[in-house]
Length: 465
Image (cartoon, rainbow, N blue to C red; front, side, top):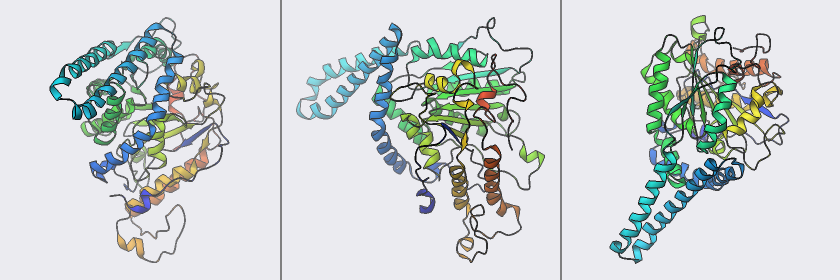
């Protein structure tokens, strides 16, 4: 179980942010203090807490999902949304019949009616999910601005979320292909109706169960990583798609050795619905060239503050569940003139409109100065350091040094004991060194752009170690 000190750690609420974009640095956890939440609490306690969180978020998620109806521009999109809402209502009525009418009406009399409803649900789900099989969206090489002979070969994967799949096929995928100049291997979301979708989200967040999509994604990504001619693999995951990617990362790290293959993978999530994302962490001290090489996938998260999925997912996991392990850096997008004027910013289009309008990372919110959330970045490292202190003697003995970065601990000469405080010092140093940079600087997503607006050497200051 997590210690009460860490479990109660929360970041103080501030007033209106002065910057439209803020960044929380990736967790280093050199002291190996964090562990997955499933290793700290029982499954029942995790489910009980998450059920309350999801129930409270259902109204906001419903408003975001149904709000897409007003944004639809084609009959196919409107039909898909209407059918999804219809099957969700039929499922809700079916649940009410099973829980209430069964108590007052003989069960045999209800069987024909319940059977008809179940058959209707199955037929509608088969219809709306028939085009939602994995497919490849081919980029237009004739109009692509990318120079294939100068740029490395990359494999791109798009993992859709709880959105209108017809709209994603019609507008989002062509846009991604133009921005990144590559084919898009697409894994759409398989819809089950709203009630079952929420139940599946609950199970994936806490039990990490694989789905048909996550297994197919794993096989495809693993095959790409093993190809010698592939220099990089990129994954774009939208809200619930991050749950499949979270399971994928844990499986890849268990099946492939750390090194050149895993380091080829970069993950970009947008409004991730996962409450944690675990990868091996830690850093050797003293530093050496071998210890500074990237051995595992690089993960970057983007989240609107009003995205209902992000509020129960990546924002909640990184800002409040400090005792868990959520890898990757987080770019938090506040309500700004760069964002489309909508009630909730939820779709992948909303993120692209804000981050990469017209495919240009310099003109959107990434062209603004990015504030480094140093307080939250250091608090995450501090929470990991607290959890790593298992020796009661270190907790209770008199301490001469009481500084924020060393957690007030007196440590001996061994490097293992110094790993946690040194990683905290590294986070503070990096936060100071990159403070004041624009959003597209030191940004993997901006560097992945392969159109006429792609960044050139000298356009950004590069990665700060």
